[in-house]
Image 1 (cartoon, helix red, strand yellow):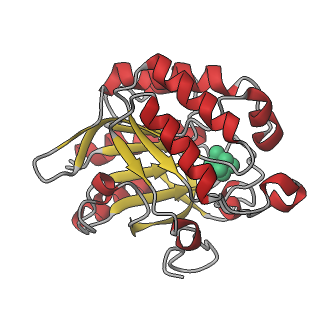
Image 2: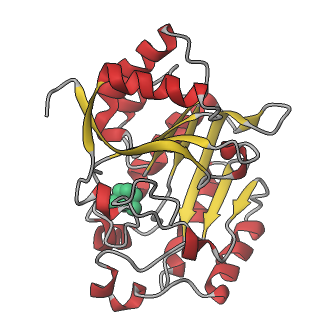
Length: 274
Ligand code: SF4
């Protein structure tokens, strides 16, 4: 693997993001990068994040992928798990913009980011779409093998807000700029979710929150019996009620059925067309 290359598992238009990021079914311009600096035991993208499925592309090829997605009618460039490739991605965005790329750039990440990298991306990323996975750092260490997740991710989200502000759409409801924070509820870990939302409300409850109930016991989840199932409706309702009680009123919740159909298979040519 050369320094001026990235590893990509799949790219193309896809529907698996929040409504303003897929624009009335036009599709997000997804680019799914291989590898991830977290090790989530329940990762639904484990084929690419942990098993490193994917192929190498040069910076020039990545810029062309972005331009082709724009030509193909995507409403944004949705960089999925981009963090470890930030240097090459930065070069590719600059190159694509020089060649006429106008789509908003979405930084779709796990939230565990360094401020240094975020500052490097300032002015190039339009929409930050971070996770805020853990309010309880012990839970973060247990399931993702990382320390101090909540403090690191909180500082990252603050920096993202400073750069692009609250989430905004154009007159057609298509996302143009701002921050959306995602939180995935983990079965039998409701206190972790309640704490995560409390931390976020202490930051700013005008944030757009995407509350996700797509938890699927994939990858190594069976080694952790307490998370080896999908989320119950009771668990979801408890967290959702807490979200509303805390005054969050902007954002989205997922269809409870989504756990069944949002799991991609990256061994297939079209991972989302199962
Ligand atoms: S952060 Fe996301 S992509 Fe990375 S291992 Fe965890 S669930 Fe998978």
